[in-house]
Image (cartoon, rainbow, N blue to C red):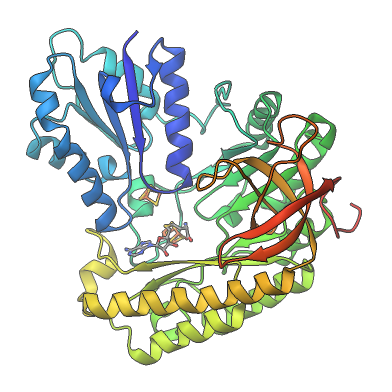
Length: 456
Ligand code: SAH
Ligand code: SF4
Ligand code: F3S
């Protein structure tokens, strides 16, 4: 059995794709290993969203060059978004690279690797639509998945054209999976112990199969995968502020298992910047959507993404973003420095004119503002009881466990003394203290369904 090591960069969709690729490899008789040193084949699942993501892959690849040249059986490959964007160019520049598989091609990974032996011929580049990845068009086997949470793609690609973004180019247009496929996959995950399904789509509000959009899909999952199966929580990401609607929010309120959390990236608080980003909404429309979500789903928290240093972003534009972060009370903010991406309208039409040092300062200030929001919320939660889905040992402190509330707040607590393995259990915890990103808690008992919701 040849041993393969997969290294994943990028977003949740890439993490899912790595898992599906691992599944395909295992089914074809390969052994997956966590240890790079013992692998005969190393595959990078790559990201292109910012230049930094590409450079990290290139430097990791360069680090393996001497091994590729010294060991006759060792092979190196790429999959994912960077492979799709520039696979041919990379193969031309890097003679020690054996193959590059685009975002819709990874189902072919076993076949491509088999073709590399014996003799060591390069397999080359495979991109575009041919050989469409699993997850679209048929239910994927998920027998290998372990752990209380699992990603499930409900759609692939993106139909938007935000001016800065490479995703539509590297992931292709929007395709929704049928409800039956999605439900079949969730059932197979639940049989393996999944307690929380995290539905993925680049713009998940554009889900359009089976009638009723994403709200219809959530209701169908709720009906067809009842709580007795073990599925205790449902989430979805990412919501687009232009497309998210009241019907979806009402569905989240009504379904006890739907997490009261939305990831709805604003990207900027300035109308001028939003227009150049071609986001399709302005600041007031974004704030209206925030108010709508809070009105429909009491207690809901919203997370956002921001890009700082977008071309032409003035101090005034930046202050508008800072003001939005200070007022909105987000659950969390993911802040990125603008990075021009080849082939995007923004890279073509606008000079990257905000100096790097200025981007860094704006980045730091937005994070500091969000940090204050988080600390205030943490202080306010002291003494209160929350329901968390326990996940496993905390990566920082293996003696303690980590879990999340439906609102996506991270709780750390000493494991309960009774009842065996806490992973996947819904627990009631009491908040004792907090830092910006973590609530330190004690376990107060076992919890039932998600709290504070109307009955369906
Ligand atoms: N589909 C999701 C996000 C996709 S990429 C959405 O629309 O929200 C994740 C985040 O990366 C984006 O939300 C954006 O904040 C950031 N991003 C995308 N392109 C970027 C670029 N060229 N430079 C910097 N950040 C970028
Ligand atoms: Fe990129 Fe915009 Fe699509 Fe998100 S919605 S993936 S930012 S083009
Ligand atoms: Fe995700 Fe990066 Fe591709 S953010 S969709 S892995 S470009």
